Image (cartoon, rainbow, N blue to C red; front, top):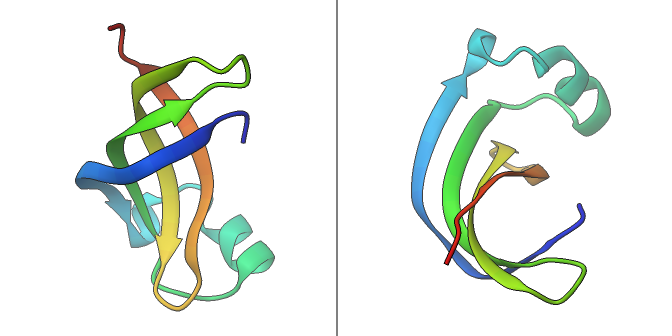
Length: 78
């Protein structure tokens, strides 16, 4: 992860669940079996150069396992 999430994630939406997740087999092998979901939300992030931006982020999450593999998808311009 080449950014740091500052504060809470807002406007959380489920993108995919169950067999709709292409990486489900890899996620189960790497982190364990669970009800995996792919989510997206908006949060303040700090980039490696110190800039703070509002951005859309995506991640995978399963009950009992937690949030994994955050990806920066769309930095919003201020």
